[in-house]
Amino acid sequence: MQIEDPKSLIADAKLVFVGRVESVMPSNIRTTLSYVPYDGVTFQWQIAKVEVVEPLKGVRKSDVVQVAMLSIDKHSKSQPTYSPPGMLEPHRDDIFFLCLGATPQTNVFAALLAPYNENLSVLSLYRSGTNTDWYVDDKMMKRVLCGALPTDVKEREDSREKQRDKEFALIYTLVNASGEIQPANVKKFGETFAMDIGKAPSTNLVYLEWETFTNPHGWRTDIPKGYEATTNINGR
Image 1: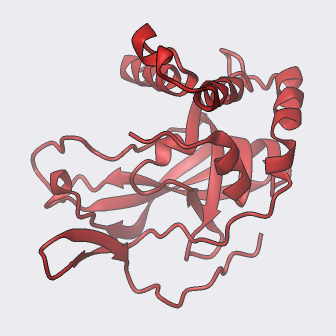
Image 2 (image 1 turned 180 degrees about the horizontal axis):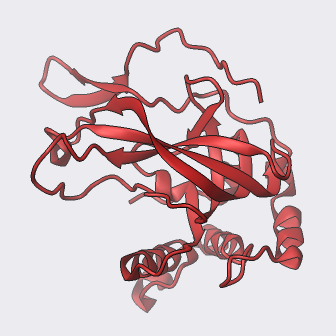
C-alpha cells in the first residue's frame, strides 16, 4: 500500500476540509476494475452529502459538498471479495478529513486516490457509531499513517518519511475524541501546510467509470470509460 505525502495531497486537491456526513445515498454510477480479486465484482458509487465544518481549501464553512464514495454492489457477486480496494463506507455523522478532486459529474467530487485507495486521501477522524470493526480499522490506519510501526521498520525510514508521519499525525488532531474541532490544532495545520493550501489544484479528473484494456501481451489495466475529451465541468 503506497502512502501519499500529505503535502502533495493538499497541494493537488481542489477541495480540502474537515466535513461531517449528512446523508448517504446510492447513485446509478457503477464500474468494474481489472485487478484480479475484483473479477465478477461491480462497484457502485455512493453519494455522500458532506457539510464543511472546517474549511481549509476551496470551500466555505457550512457548504455542502457531494462526494462520491466507492462501495461494492451487493448484487454483483454472491461470494465475499478478498483484498478489496480501500473504501470509506460512510455513515451519517462520520467526520472525515477530505482531499478531493473534481469528477466528470457536475458538482460531484471524489477522493484524489479513488477508486483504489480513497481511504488514503479521505481520512476518517471520527465515527459516530459504536461498531468495533470501525474502531479497529481506524486504529490500524492511524498506526500506518502516523508511523507507529515496528522498531526495525522505523529505523529504515529516512527523514522525509518521518516528517510525513508527523504531518499525518497532525491531521488526526484536528478533532478530539468526541468529534469536536480543535481550533489550536487547526491553526497549527494552517501554518504547517500554508504553501500547499495556497497552490493551484491539479486539473486531473477523478474518474468514476472505468473499463479494462488488454494489451497485445495480455496485460490488463483500467482506463477511463468514455471520457477521453472530458474537461473539468465543476464550477466550485
